[in-house]
Image (cartoon, rainbow, N blue to C red):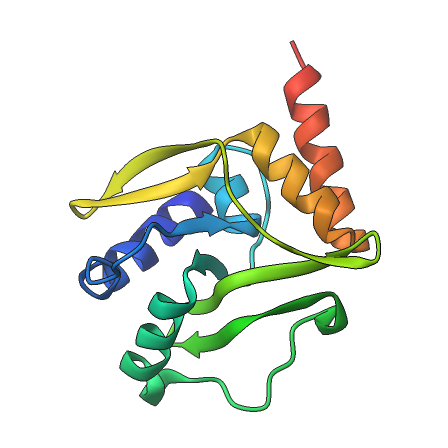
Length: 157
């Protein structure tokens, strides 16, 4: 049911997402659900884009912008960031996301992904190995828990 809710939310946004100029990815908990890792809940859809596309979405979705929001562990991340809310849809956009790791800023690059089609929109999702790497790079407790969940899922028969 959660997978269908995420897919429905992406379908709702698909006309706007189709206007993006650069590759974009669904990451975070929504990506886990879309790769069939069982989660009971996810708060939002995390959308990794270029800075150009993040700026475009911030302007396009200005009326839906969530004001006064700071991401958890904000000191570890920098990007062209925006958080947007529709009735049952919450989206975080991260343009050219950088993560502070081992004393330096690293731009998050997705190297392994697969694509699914939602409402005639091709959506990129990192592979499970890539998602595990990303969660470990983020390094917050909640991220490490999700990385361990992926590892557990991969080793089950």
